[in-house]
Length: 129
Image 1 (cartoon, helix red, strand yellow):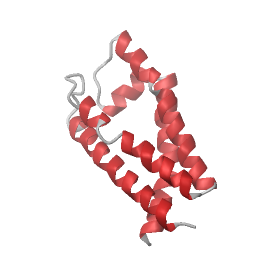
Image 2: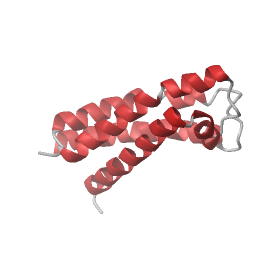
Image 3: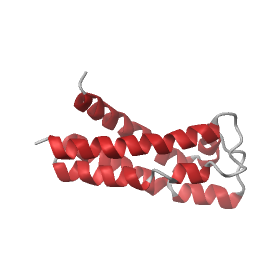
Image 4: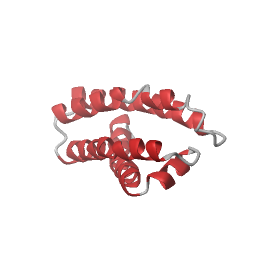
């Protein structure tokens, strides 16, 4: 499989991932936080997490648009969006409420993954007709 094919496959997977994360944050924030490795949140943390649902649903929509249209500007927009997420999970990993073994490392790795996606989608923006 070529790099381009892998990036296109990753993009399709991110549609599902961000849709699941956004939907979970909106409809079941407490359970979704638990899956991520967060301790039982207080009411304020639950509402703050729920507030992030539109962000992840927007990411899912951006991945879907890039999948369907595949224009360079779609890939640039997606690269930019992913770039905005490079440090957010690492900041969140500093929370003492993220306590499940491996959860902090997973959040840091998510930032690295976002950097890789930003670079990869920028590559698609430059190379796809």
